[in-house]
Image (cartoon, rainbow, N blue to C red; front, side, top):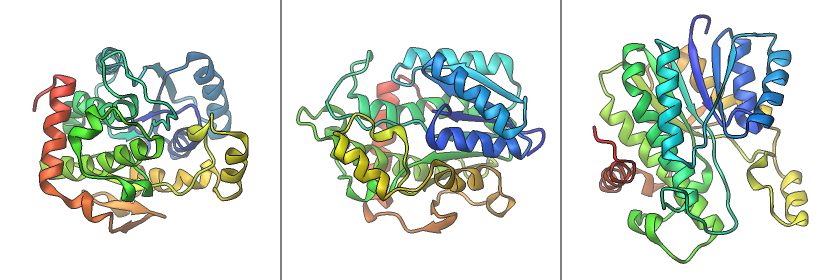
Length: 277
């Protein structure tokens, strides 16, 4: 990975932090994209120490804000002339329904639209840097998502798990559609289930639930192995449009292969972000 430039969103904790460490250990220059400057600075010091690398950079971006995402993308392209790997990792599990400053339901906005917008804004640079890779962190929870793109955007009734599952199904649909649109460009797109990881994703749950989750989850370091593998391994350099778990391709849910749903999701995502092909 020496000479490669990577971007990892949500890089200050959990899977994102461990993915950053893994890529830095392999010799890549890694740009951490984080929302909270204080937490990110602390994580940056830890990552440099654990990876023995100084080729790590921090950029602040609130993925709940399309304005912030656009500012980050502009700043990145001003400072870097290539991008070899984009790891869309940041995600949330929100107990209560809320709207972003753009008026979009927050789980859908952060877990899917941020993936879409960051990718689209950096895609020209990735084409120029090809062969390059896009890695989207999804979840096995996508298997519980329901295909109703309009409801994902505008539903008033809210279930935290349903919103999360729907957003993870959106990750898989987006990955497959992106891979189809990138055929022949030298840019690959794959997604993954990291495993049931003990991370900050479910912070804010009742104490007994947090304790139960910790009993049945794996470490962030183990959870990051598939992300790091897809971002770096020569074994998957030419593979695109696949869903991985435990560093192996797996069949995703039947719903995730719905071509019409993927096309509709792409169109809605363009409308909500104001960005066209």
